[in-house]
Length: 212
Image (cartoon, rainbow, N blue to C red; front, side, top):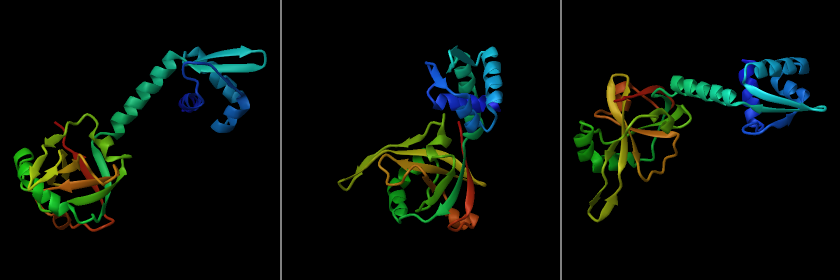
């Protein structure tokens, strides 16, 4: 664990592609261990090929090696795969009242491209996990609802990601022009999700992205 903390600390300090000057006491304070433990840890990491260390007089310079960078990248990939696996945890909130209007405009496209007649309204959730709604869609291709012109007004493309909330299938829709930040998700479904699932503002729900 301390090896990982040390690599992250060195990366933050800029030990990427160049050696940086470090002091054992500063690293010890940040890692919560003794300077002697820091020295021993660096020596072990150097033997393992994770860092390159050079001592010039009383000054110590350290750089994360290629092997160390590969280790961090593999760790990052493993964490991302474990966490960002299509699960969204959100809190139900009230919308601004425009959802019903836009769902009606795109209803024919949702029926054609998503396979269901949408309830005229959206369920809005504030995304608590992951950081943004887009993180949950990593590697997932959206269904594109093409834009159109109606009565002189232009409606842009909409990205739709199929999702499931309990036993109800729906989709998170993201207009090409949206007023919502990436922490807010709008969900359409063939039923009123609030009524079907007994949801109220403040309730937490888990949304699963349907892949493939």
